[in-house]
Amino acid sequence: MININSRDVFSHPAFFLATGFGIGLIPFAPGTWGSLLGILIYLALHALGLTSLWELLIILLFFFLALWACNVVLEKRDVHDHPALVIDETVAMMLLLVTIPITTVWVIVAFLTFRVLDIFKPWPISTVDAKIKTGLGVMLDDLVAVLIGGFLIFIVRLLL
Image (cartoon, rainbow, N blue to C red; front, top):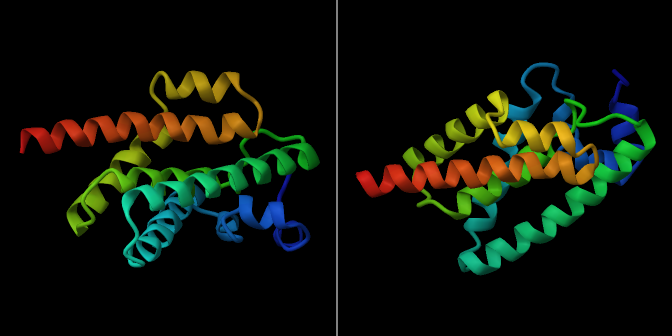
């Protein structure tokens, strides 16, 4: 696997963004750290008191910046979904949080649900991950995990 290091992260804005501002270089569980970064960014955004629509629009902007960053990194390193690329987990976690009540319990449920789906990649997440080898593929498998996770959380909330 082609290595991405701190020199790369600080040499180009795309590497900086795609690695979650460098957090993806943490050698253990980088996707988990990227997801936690998503929680922190979302909570800061949520604290601004914006409507859910504005939060969603800002996350959408962040998604397109992340897509650009992933495409640049893949082009420069010729590697698909390197473990250091955690911006996909960051954006996905933010997107999932828009769909739930922001309480400690639901944030933890969303985090655990997303991490299980992202790690184990059940169908159709695994298919997207295997077939699309571009920046869109890096981002899209996590978006599919958000859709599935959001649906599962919705069902649990209905049953409670």
